[in-house]
Image (cartoon, rainbow, N blue to C red; front, side, top):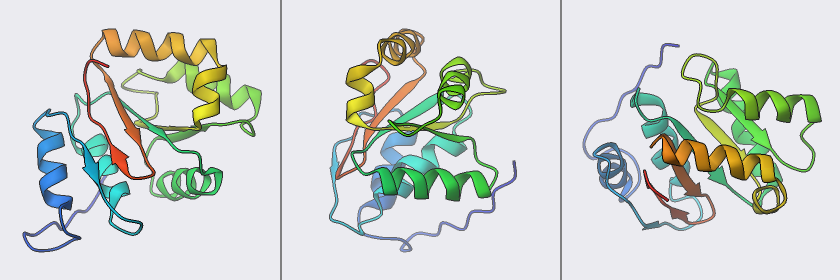
Length: 150
């Protein structure tokens, strides 16, 4: 995967650079941004540029946002997957199997809160990733949280 990035100081939306830098330094981040404030870049960029980053779990109640982001990232060659009530079982099984595999697994996994609560298999996988220190949790409707130990 080859990404071309042009991030110069002063570009972007207010607080984006600050949040991205803090996240890349491994700090826990709480960031409140309004709609259109650029939250997606704040969790997508660190997930892509940090090879030791592991898996970023994006929790969102918005199915349309999940579908749009996974499709857009996939079209760019970025490993992204969705685990929602409408995800086909075979695809869900593949995503759960590959999560955390640096060569095969998705870098970003988008889930609904309902899926997190309802899936014991997902919770088990998240616990394993957390214990390995390779999980980043993001809630995408206004709060971004970066934690290596949840």
